[in-house]
Each structure stands twice: as structure tokens, then as C-alpha cells.
Length: 278
Ligand SMILES: NC(=O)c1ccc[n+]([C@@H]2O[C@H](COP(=O)([O-])OP(=O)(O)OC[C@H]3O[C@@H](n4cnc5c(N)ncnc54)[C@H](OP(=O)(O)O)[C@@H]3O)[C@@H](O)[C@H]2O)c1
Image 1 (cartoon, protein in one colour):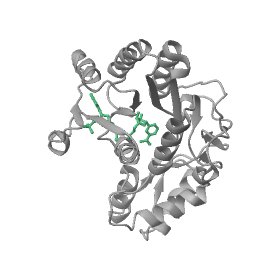
Image 2 (cartoon, rainbow, N blue to C red):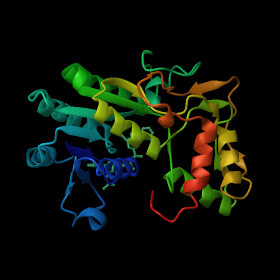
Image 3 (tube, rainbow, N blue to C red):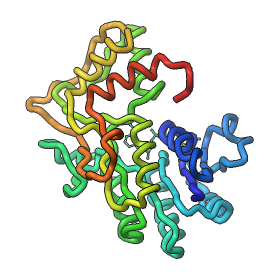
């Protein structure tokens, strides 16, 4: 398959590109990181602010599968995804895999959520993700796969780098006591995407651990596992237990790619000590 990863220079996009390259012809986009990716012939510079930029890349690559791992201005992203939907709708063999977020439920924090729950957001980010999902699903139906994820963790991810920096410099670590979330890794998401493509699965998928765990305790345990100094925390404790979790309710994905919170912690302890980039 010819795959185009939008945002292939980002944290998740890089991992997905690495995983899919084993079986597919993979192209990607970057925006600001020209020094790192400018001379790679499978990477194209994309500027969401330039209306011709996306169309030119689509016409050049003619992808069968587009995977959107994009960041950037919300309005520009909405416009770009509308344009992508128009491109896909004209040919039956094309589809998109869109990376959405647990924030689509951030106004419904009394319980975790499954794929079939109704979205309800209060944050700008959550509402933007809902809008983007709708644009794609309304135009493309089954040719759009939505992947909703909680925070991404993995080797040298920005959150681990910040945790290391804060603990080394005795800076209080921002936390959310009494917030129960589920967790995922860059590798888990990449493996699910690979499987979804191979099996031609459709619909919405929640990728993350099957269980939830208090955010502050997770950070605390991670510090121990990574041999970091015991952190001091700052953050308001919620009066009652709150949730921001997208639990995986679909049963098609093999057990070996399902995780529990303890698996994620063990995984992070292992990979963070490795020399290789992933
Ligand atoms: N990180 C999380 O914990 C998390 C949680 C839930 C959902 N998500 C979603 O998962 C996806 C991937 O997240 P990530 O953390 O891997 O993102 P990231 O590391 O910030 O990467 C964002 C990508 O978008 C590109 N980009 C940014 N502005 C652009 C613009 N104006 N024009 C064209 N391209 C632009 C970046 O290019 P350059 O690198 O060249 O600047 C990069 O390739 C995103 O859709 C995000 O909303 C992430």
C-alpha cells in the first residue's frame, strides 16, 4: 500500500512511519523541521497555512491510505481535513486513519468511555477534535477510521523529558490528583494502526490500557522506575474521583497489543534505558 503520514516528523508520526515501512511504501510530511527532513526524498514539507501545499503533496504521492498525526492551528487543520475528505471521496480505494483524543469526552468526566459513547467536550482542543471527526465521518463513512488516544508515553517522549528536567531541577511537577486516566504508548498505537490496515478494520477505536490509574501515582511510580529524584507535586486535588479515559471496547485487536497500566510502566522503564531511538 502507498501510505502518506501527515505529521510524520512528530512524536507519533515518526513511530508509525517506522512501523509501517516494513510492509508498505511510506511517505510523510514535516512542517518546521526542514534541517532534519528537508533532504529525505520520501518526506514533503507541508504548510497548513498554504492552501496549495496539501493538494500538491496528495497529487504527487497519490496515497491509498492517509494517516493524520497533525498538530498546529485548529482552524487550518479543520480546513485541511475537509480538503483531504474531498480528495478521498472521489476514489473508492482511498481511506484515512485520523488520530483523535480522549479530550472528546472531557466534559463527561464521571466515568471512562468506550467507542460507542456520545462525545461531549468542554475544552477547545476536545471540541476541535470532535469537529474534525465529524467532517471526516460525515463525508467518508466507513472509509474513515478514528483512533482516540489518551496521552502518549514512550521513549524520550516530551512528557518524560519534562519529568526528568523538573525532578533534576527541583521544580514542582504539574499533576492532577484524583484524576484517573488510561495510558498508551507510541508503540502500542503504531501496532494497532498496522493491524487495522492489515485486517481492513473500520470505525472508531480507543487505544490505551484496559484499566485506569491515578495520574499523580503514575508519575510517582514512573520516577521510581526511571531512578529519578522523588518529585514534589503541584496541582489541585479534585473533590471526587474524575476520569479521562478512552477504554478499548473493540475485541478485534490481538491480546498481545492490549495493555494494562503496569505493562506501560514496565515498558517505559525498559525502553528509556535503551540506546536506540525507539
Ligand atoms: N501527544 C499526545 O499525548 C496526544 C494525545 C492525544 C492526541 N494526540 C494527537 O495525536 C497526533 C500526534 O501527536 P504528537 O504528539 O505526535 O504531535 P507532534 O509531535 O506535536 O507532531 C505534530 C506534527 O504536525 C506537524 N505540524 C505542526 N504544525 C503544522 C503546520 N502548520 N503545517 C503542517 N504541519 C504541521 C509537525 O511538523 P514539524 O515537526 O516539522 O513541526 C509534526 O509533524 C496529533 O493529532 C495530536 O492531537 C496526541
